[in-house]
Amino acid sequence: MKEVTIILRPKMYFETKKALDEVGFQAMTVQEIIGRGKSPIQYDFDGEVVTHRLVAKRMLTMYVRDEDVDFLVETIVNVNKTNSAGDGKIFISPIVEGIRVRTGERGNESVL
Image (cartoon, rainbow, N blue to C red; front, top):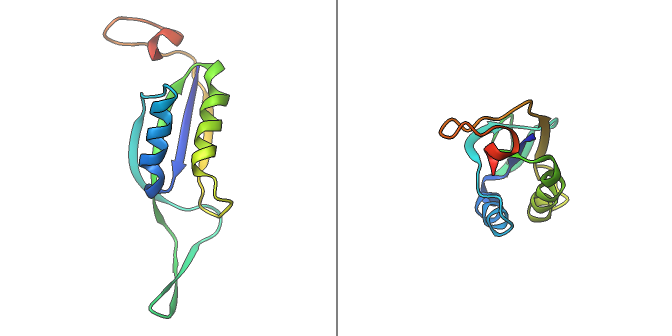
């Protein structure tokens, strides 16, 4: 089992959620966050260049079976890739075990 953390542009959340729903990934935790990559974000504000250290993002956290990770990542990349800075990040971490409290199911059964 893997924990997949996805950081993306807020405006891409609904399109990403729709694509994930369509391919069977409904369960997730979503947070509004602020952050940045390795470079500060610059934009023109009334003729003045303004540098922001932090920008709004959405963070999705999902727990999926090992065999579903590649398809999940492919779906997310297909929706969010624009070849521009800020397209997002995906982090994948191993999970030792998951337990569904209500039923006591463990492992992959806890996330199905």
